[in-house]
Image (cartoon, rainbow, N blue to C red; front, side):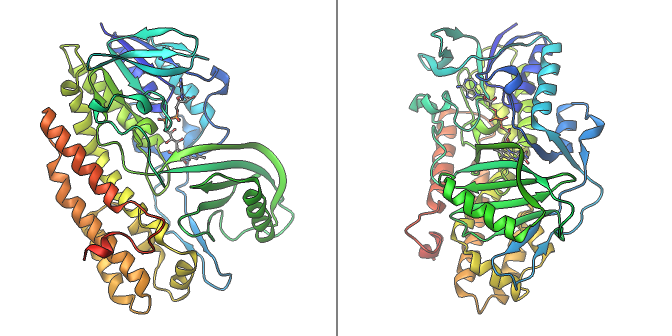
Length: 453
Ligand SMILES: Cc1cc2nc3c(=O)[nH]c(=O)nc-3n(C[C@H](O)[C@H](O)[C@H](O)COP(=O)(O)OP(=O)(O)OC[C@H]3O[C@@H](n4cnc5c(N)ncnc54)[C@H](O)[C@@H]3O)c2cc1C
């Protein structure tokens, strides 16, 4: 029986805690928030398949219709674009406080212990091993394995020694600061034509905003790469209100800002005695910021890989099975999405509005772009290139996306199925170099690959 420490109540960490405790390990989860204050005051959507993958019974009231996004362009005379209807529904929608409480109840029933109100401040490193962590009340907690589920700003990941090769910080344009609040819906006035509206009124460098109309409330999200300033928020809310009279200024719940990683996953998820999961390892869908599904699946893979290590050493080598399965089952697809997201900061709201007006993008094509089948994507992008003669700037950007996806297809096979320090180091270097080479650079108007052709 191993002594397993889970840092933070991230979803993947709690799922791993549940499965490892159920298998007889001594598992303790250390969480800085108090039990009643966990999660967000919001409802979020995620893929039902992830709960099934994790073997979690789905509460009947979680089932929801598939979201059908409508993109509202900058110019009022350009048509909005509503995504095609997808049936049957594979979407769950859960109250975030209820969801995390449900996962915790499973873990507790299996024997995992939880310490709430306990802030972790730094890792404890002994030789080349992550042996535990220090807490804000001065305790030194040591164990056989540390599972880092502390979210995007994990203090553990941020202070890991360089020899682990684990990136400490998310980097520029990799985190969206998202304000989220629910307002009362006025049903006596003009109602929107579609319920789930994403406003493309800002250039990609700024962020995005949505207005989602529920039965009795209106869900507002304003996400920015820079800080969400009060003046900006007020401006956006006024604009939303002018276009959506059913949005009252009467706030019902929420009103906090939280961070969402929108980038590729870490190249290295593991070190001796350490594994990162969920937002701590940047496991989100980079175009949508959805991370619940990936976290539930990754937590399951992690637990299974830990259980497969019968030596109980939990070294980089034995934890590599988690890394390998994560990339094969989730990570490479997540990378392709992150590559597409990388194009967004270069795209101007006016450009998108013009494309919509000229009918050069339809909803099936936009849906296909957020899919992950590489051959389909490249064929679609090539097809679009032929039609974009009068949009040379956008054409160049799209051509660069094809080049990036092609370069990644060359990089992918260099992922080592079996761990050796040399191969893992080579993989990490090449992966990080690739994403750094395509990273958005504010001073350049065109993506970097343009200069390489
Ligand atoms: C506004 C918003 C909307 C979103 N919408 C969706 C959506 O629709 N669908 C979806 O799938 N995802 C959505 N996400 C993303 C989703 O919240 C995350 O990807 C998901 O929760 C996975 O993150 P996690 O569980 O690993 O970490 P988190 O949910 O961030 O949990 C980390 C935990 O660690 C704790 N912690 C942090 N630091 C410490 C410390 N020092 N010591 C101890 N404990 C610590 C935190 O208190 C927290 O409980 C949204 C996020 C935001 C902010």
